[in-house]
Amino acid sequence: MITLVRRVTAVCLLGTALTACAATVHQAPRVARPVPSATTAPPTLAPGPGGLTPVFRNGSRAHGRTVALTFDADMTADQGARAAAGEHFDNPGLISALRALKVPATVFMTGRWAEEYPDQARSIGRDPLFEVANHSYSHYAFTDDCYGLPTVSADRMRADVERAYAAFRKAGVPDARPYFRFPGGCYDRRALQELTPDGVTAVQWDVVSGDAFATDAEAVARQVLEGVRPGSVVVMHCTRSAAPTTERVVREVVPRLRARGFRFVKVSELIGS
Image (tube, rainbow, N blue to C red):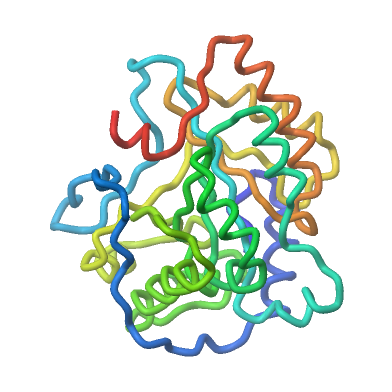
């Protein structure tokens, strides 16, 4: 569920939490990635060496003081019981804060999250302030030994990604972007090779917010402010139960970064520039 964090203690908690809810990934019928309805297709990177899926970490350092805030809307394939028991994997307060502050953002959503919160997925996907990108269906790892996450076998990787796009379509998200974020940020050559036919750009980051399991919003905000450079991609989370400070962090860092001359953009703008 949660992306890499800098502190070892948070990583250990993450592995424990996600291992507890792990189960076998069910293979879904392979479906075509949705075709964007916009007249101009969103920008992607050219294939990497050997034709592999390209990986994007940050934009140009020379094209102005831009920064992309990205939020992982995480939920694993088998956390439905926890959601039914009252655990909140969404964060509507964070989305409201971004809207109030008029901050464009890219939300990397799992298909399971879109199934659990279809109204929110549709609202985010239809708001021009945001763009929805793919964070897999199951949030199972695409490599072995990825911070305790269960693993998707190589022959099911594409199906897992494509199942997420199908979940977005079913929820009413009209234009899911051809961008993919690996669960846990873990990938290798095999994973890049398996996803090549889908034509996605893998999106990583260069600033770790440290919001996962954090309780000190000031410390997280300080980490973001110290790490941001022109063209940065910041990874944060849209999950109340596992990242409870994120809304407060956003409300603090946005005006301070704007005061430093930064302009907030979506990942697509960084890739396109």
